[in-house]
Amino acid sequence: MRFTLAFGSRLRPILDLVFPPRCVYCGRLGDYLCETCRAEAQPVGAEICIRCGNPLTQRGLCNQCRQDPPAPLRGIRGVFFYNGPIAQSIRSLKYHGVRQLAPILAAPLAAYIQEHPISIDLMIPVPLHPQKQRDRGFNQSELLAAGVTRILDLPQRTDLLQRIRHTQPQAQLNRVQRLQNVAGAFAPQHDARLHGETVLLIDDVATTGATLRACAQVLQEIGAGDIWALTVARANVSTVLDEKPLTLSPVEVFLLWDAERRSSRDDPATLFI
Ligand SMILES: [Zn+2]
Ligand SMILES: [Zn+2]
Image 1 (tube, rainbow, N blue to C red):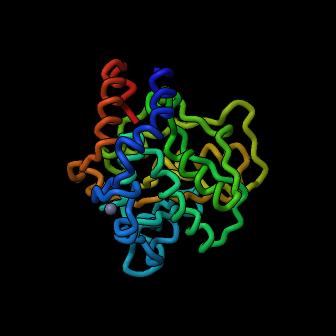
Image 2 (cartoon, protein in one colour):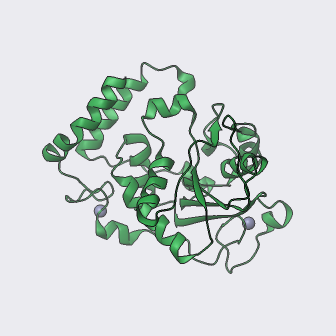
């Protein structure tokens, strides 16, 4: 497995020559997400619930958050709706290993942080279970945070939080089940300690925010100050369930084949997110 992954990353420049970068959404040659498709991404905008970040007809507090705000999170924000080119890019990054999409998706995260100035001390990417990360070869949230670091010089810390158990994929679950599913899934890493720093959790997609909230609870326990969360996309349950068939570039076909070949040897339990 290690050999396969190392070989895969060394193979990439050769693959780029054989299969030049192609837009994962429209298939146009030249970039992994072309300018036209980037322009098609739909920003969530400012008319949102100030706590959970869900879109509303006007900026305010949604009914759900009036009863059960996502404490200890100060707020969750998603830059784009989870559809079209953004949904395709996130799936291509996560499931087909098109890592070149991470800096492309990190750029709007960095822009969002600059446009909404909160004095953030550090970013924490939502961790994957170690087994999951070994199978995937990377944590997409770490790659996204690394992209933000390169633009804004904002540090990320991966030594504070860990995912200690596998959880069922959240897409199939309702809000209450999601909270139960991730309860106890995260824990502090050994001796992790914060001292009132303002923390920004980074993830690819948020739906109900249950995962982000579970992370925030652990961070509060180890001494974080204000905790915010920022994701590339904001989904609702129906859009996640309603995924269109994937359109695959030749590179993705290769990577998908490679990933399937590897996952077919794995224990089914490791297939859970
Ligand atoms: Zn395109
Ligand atoms: Zn809300």
